[in-house]
Length: 250
Ligand SMILES: [Zn+2]
View (cartoon, rainbow, N blue to C red):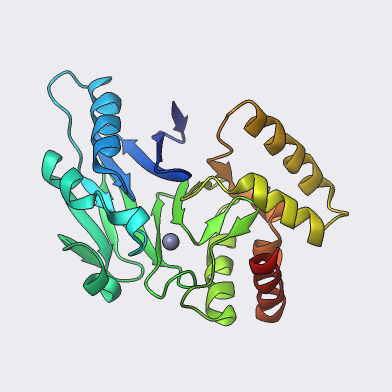
């Protein structure tokens, strides 16, 4: 279940029907991202951490990407169980569970000698953020999905497009931890708007096989999305707006 990547340990934690929460570890530091379901989150932390540490599970941070219930509902219980600190966007604190650490855009925390950085990625909601672990991992919640992006509930096309550009500018080797397993449905839409894209065809075929076998399609490297994701590849806010509107009706 766990993946080793650039010194980090990534554990995918399925929740609800199609949500993914994530546990990230580095040199003894641990963070849990978007715990919708406290029981599933606690179990995952105990299993992952007890596997390497005999003397009791520990969790440093509970990171929240945005205020939707399917990303925060288990935060308080999970944090209380392990004495972890709840971290979120200061600008959206009123809509989040009570924050122990309120970060501003660009704010950082020490993470086992590596750096954990919050960047603002508004569009799905106004207060949405992503968390970068060193230059290796981006937990991007409902901003960016494989072959798609989140619905534009609060932002404008200009704002959402700028957030996607921010993610697109990260190292192509960045591993993306997205908030939902929507890749198969996203692939159908992506192929309809970019039918001649060979990299997209290949990824769509791979995704179909993975889902047939019951396998998750995430995490995914940014390099793959840069070649295949129509929303990430949209050159202008206008193009992004057209795609977003078309996907909403697809
Ligand atoms: Zn959401």
